[in-house]
Length: 83
Image (tube, rainbow, N blue to C red; front, side, top):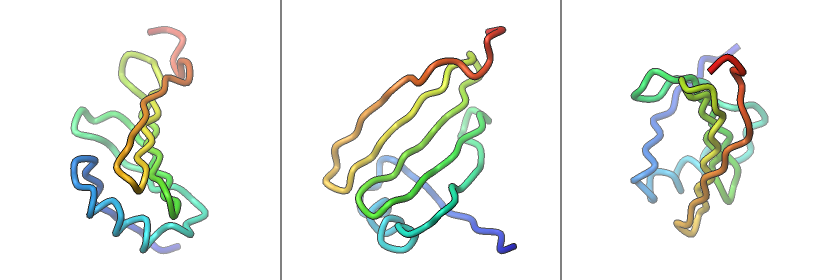
């Protein structure tokens, strides 16, 4: 299995568009950690990038970055009921 690595910066719209162009047909997410060392999954589609963060406080945050530059932030419940 190929080890795929990407550099994701939500403040770089052109960089995100390049990722959408290059990896928009990906069938599996990219996994990694953010600057707070929280686990993240990055789903790249042709028109958007979804970043799911398993926050240390137990919540699941989903950020959606659209090709046109708009973004959304959703909370999808808790992954860790003890926090």
